[in-house]
Structures are given as structure tokens and as C-alpha cells.
Image (cartoon, rainbow, N blue to C red):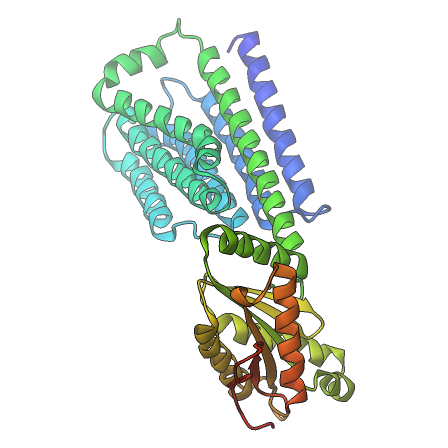
Length: 398
């Protein structure tokens, strides 16, 4: 190797090693996405190993050593895929990944017994690497598509897709013009500088993409925490208010009806006083679970404060709100929450958008109906209305 090539190898190894240390630092002292950060660190270590093995091999090097170099590169991309999947808490496509690893091992074993050109074996490994990288882009796209726009999702997947495409081109070259490729790779006049510059771009792109994806995931987590109640995972009061504001705007503009339910746990103070606040938290989480399981995915459930919950039911009038209220009462009063403890019940107040002059007034009407439900014996649901029967669903008090 020339002095310039040695310098490039040193620079690439230094950058990848520095990236590995950075990801390790994020994993342990900073505790930032520990599993994903560790895998990003291992990815860089494997890239350095692949680079060093590649710089040592020559025309006389055995086929198996060539394949070990390619397998180190494949292992780096698979580890990168694991990290991305861990980052977004999604599946890493275990069947596809396992199949790729098995095929790679079979290819390595075959190189010991089959007398064939090393390029054909390398073509298989690089094909697996291309598939792995493309599936990584797919995982990333699907995760980002749910939280952002399709444009943003595609933008983040460009580096992985481009690298995957380049690997496919390399596979086609190895497969259909192996002698031309061999002459180019093994000639004594060939300089490996283009390869090293490409490898440097690969290391930088993978780490920049990984860092950008990690920051994006961190933003998503902060966004989630900003809108969620930490105890129950439901929407918090501010997020519920924003949801109701949006529903009210649609109600005014497009005459879309919706209903809100105010829910309160009956005699919750007795639970706290008798069993302690830890048990009280368990009770709140139990009721939150029942509310989620008794409503649709399009409905919004939130913790309004303390033991109070607020539910927004889009495209729902008071009659359908009646059925939801009955379902809530049944679920909360019949599903056990803690062995040996008295059953929890709830009171529900309901109001429809057509009854209110503003979204704030709507919540106030639901709260007034809840107050009437609690004063009427609890474990029942009451709808706000001036000229109708207040009782939506009745159930004997526990």
C-alpha cells in the first residue's frame, strides 16, 4: 500500500473507532437508548475489522479470507439493522435476518470445498448485505411514516437506499463481468484509493444516518412525554384540551358531532387512605386500561387530573355516548383489579357538542353531569340536558 492509502486507512479506522467510543459513551454513562447505541458501536467495530482484513488481502489470499472480510461487512450491516429496529421498538425481521446469516455461513463453508472464483462467493455475501440494508430502510421508513410525513420518511431512508443500490450494482458486476472486475481489482497498477474513499463515505453516512435517526427518536419520545400522563400513558390534560379544540373546530366548520365523557373513580380517597398511594396508583392504571379497552382507536382518552378522566368520542352523538357509558360502567365494575380488595366503580358525566356554546363550556357541562352522577349514588352515568331524563345508565351502587 502507498503512503496515501495507509493514511486513508488510518483516518477511516480513527473515525470509525471514535464513532464506536461515542456510541458506547451514549449507551453507558448517558444511558441514551442503551441497546441501540451499543449495537451502533459494534457496527463501527465490525466496519474497522472489515477494513483491516480488506487491506491485508491480495491476489494470492485464499478465498476463505476474502469471504471473512465480506462477512465482517455483512455482520456490520446486520448489527446496524438490529440497532435501527431496537431504536424504533419494532421487529428486526428475524426470519429474513436468520436466513441471511445461514446462507452466509453456508457460502463460507462451501468456499473450503468448492473450487470457484472468489467473486462468485463475494457476490452472494454482498447480495445479502444489500437485502439487509434495504430492509433496514424499510423498517426506518415505516417507523417514521407513522410519526412524520412520507417526505420526511423517504428523506431519512435515502442513504440506506442508495448504499443498498450500490451493493446491488456490485453484485451484478461480480456475477456478469467477473473477469473484468478481477482484472481491475488484482492488477498491480490498481490503486485502492477509490475503494478507501468509498469506504470512508460509507462509515460517515452510516453514522450520520444513525445519529440523525437517534435524535429523531429522541424528539418523538419527548413529544410523546409532552402529551402523555406518565402514570397511565393516557393523554394528559393539555393534550386532551388540544384534541377537544380540534374536534370543536370540525364541529363548527363541518357540523361534525362529538361527545365527551367525564369519568371519576368512586370513593378513591378511601382506597388511598386504606391501602396507600402505591395501591392508589395501581387503581388509577387499572381504570385507565378499562377506559382504553372500552373505547375505539379513534377515541381520545386522557387523565384530566387526580382520579378524573376525560374521553372524547368523535362522530358520536348522545345516544351512542350512552352505549359507551354503559360499557365503561360494566367494565370498571366487573373486571377485578386487585385480589382481596373491594371492586372499583366509576361515575360518568356526558355532554354532546350540540349542547354547548364553546369547547370549554362543553367540558363544564360534562363536569356538571358527573357531579350529578356522584350525588345520585355513584356507579352510574348522567347526561347533561335541560328537558331530558338525566339517567343514561343506571346501576345499583356498590
